[in-house]
Image (cartoon, rainbow, N blue to C red; front, side, top):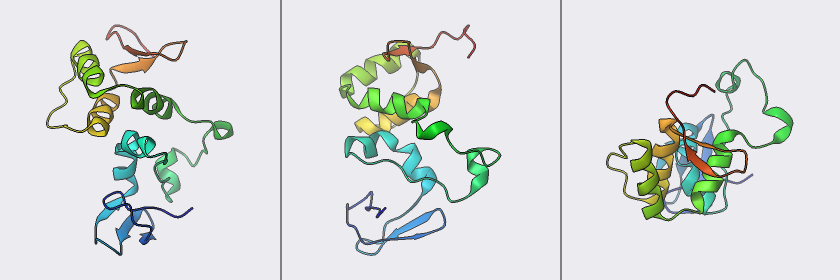
Length: 133
């Protein structure tokens, strides 16, 4: 699969291991950066790159039957939200979004907080701190 630059969207991207360099604009990033910006990539109809290092998957285990993980489901759900909705959800969850200004930055910060989850119906909900997963 050809990668597109996450800065200028050019197809002239060179990958070396888990690192990328855009030949057009010179932007440099890695797999972790793509995964942290999964909401942004999803808004463009793209999936973040997978690591080429097996240790990142935890004991070399592939994802179960190719299904998206919980984070992928959260990203897909949050892409449908407006920025105001994400701000409201972050407030309800008690999550400080820091200097995140763009929708994908806010969604990524909210997901990383671990304070949201999907309920049985697939709706985004605030995780009660007393709950255990």
